[in-house]
Structures are given as C-alpha cells and as structure tokens.
Length: 124
Image (cartoon, rainbow, N blue to C red; front, side, top):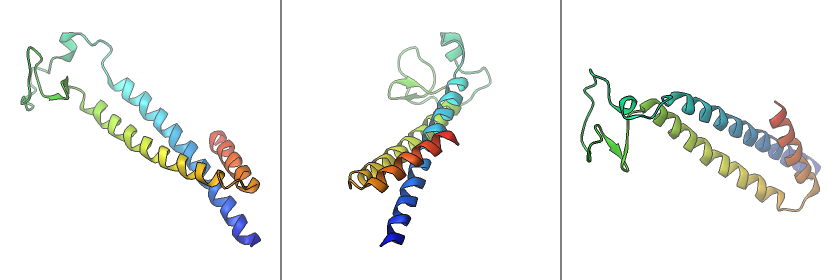
C-alpha cells in the first residue's frame, strides 16, 4: 500500500539520520578521549600520583599499578570514553547493517530514503 511504503521510506530516512548522528557522536568521543590522555607518555607521567592509594594487583615488572591485558590503567577517564566509543561503534554497525539490508530490497524509494537520510543526518 502507498501508506506502508511511505512509512517504510520515513523509517529508513530516520535510521540513516541516526546512523550519521552516531557516527558524529563517536568522533566527538574520540576527540575527548584523546584530550584525556597526557601530553607526554614518559615514565614520570605514567606513574601514579603520590597520594594515590588505588589497587595494585596485577603488576608486572617495573610497571606500577593495575594492568589490563598487560597495559597500565592510569587513565580511568580515557577508559570510560573508550567504553562509550565501543558502545557507539556497536550501535553504528547495527544501524548500518539495518540500512544496508533495507537498501538490498532493490526498491528505488527505499534507496532514495536512505540517501536522503544520510544527507540530512550529515547536514544536521
């Protein structure tokens, strides 16, 4: 029916816009994560603060503090941003595959809805 097709095109348009919004949100989180890292990655800047009494389990060699997969965890704010980026990535992949699946229906109106949604999402 024409109403069902119009609703389908609108849903694909909104999904494409959401995909672009998630992509931009992921880029913003990457920028914040990079700003959360120290300017220098020398041993002095990686060492914990004097008053820091955080957990020290999992230490290896001369690297003080806790480790995650062999890397020191001294940047909890950076790690939170990384978790956020991971979640945004999962949402972006799911939305991308949903839009791709809709486009693979080989319907010209659905295809145009995906293109228009991507364009509008990038513009906004």
